[in-house]
Image 1 (cartoon, protein in one colour):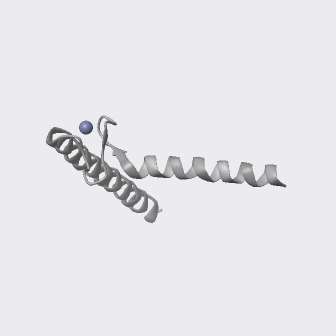
Image 2: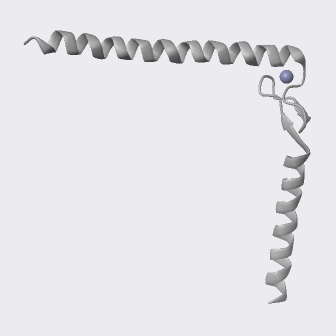
Amino acid sequence: MTDDTEKKKRRLKKAMDTDSRLMAHQHCPIDGKAIPMSEEFCSPACQEKYQSMMKKRKFTIMLFYAATIMFIILILISGGST
Ligand SMILES: [Zn+2]
């Protein structure tokens, strides 16, 4: 019995330790450097990189959607008459 509670306590303490470590900092999405929770990036250069990356990604997604819609329209046009 006492052994069990001891184990539980230890596990809880370990979980809390991990939590506080996670709460204390996060990582820069560009180079993975540890940064404080109040910051999003480790440097303005990383912020710029991230923003241009997101723009590129948005553009790629838009292109993908446009291609899919074009493909569907083409199928509808070619299949509709027969
Ligand atoms: Zn960074």
